[in-house]
View 1: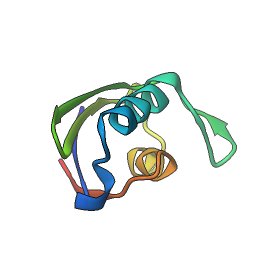
View 2 (view 1 turned 180 degrees about the horizontal axis):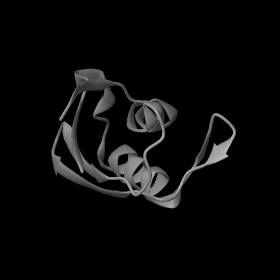
View 3 (view 1 turned 135 degrees about the horizontal axis):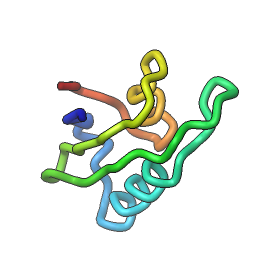
Length: 75
């Protein structure tokens, strides 16, 4: 379970925020591997809560990059 703070320029509008959640929840392919869907929810305007069910090296950072955002802080 992670708290992800995004960079200020990555927050987007409501439609973009919904799209980010859909992409994270759907699952994606990274480094040639199919990832399982993640649980994701916005905590506030610049912070996501993400729960992963698998642990690929730097998986969450790669997922956030794939949705067009950047990780400012990860806890």
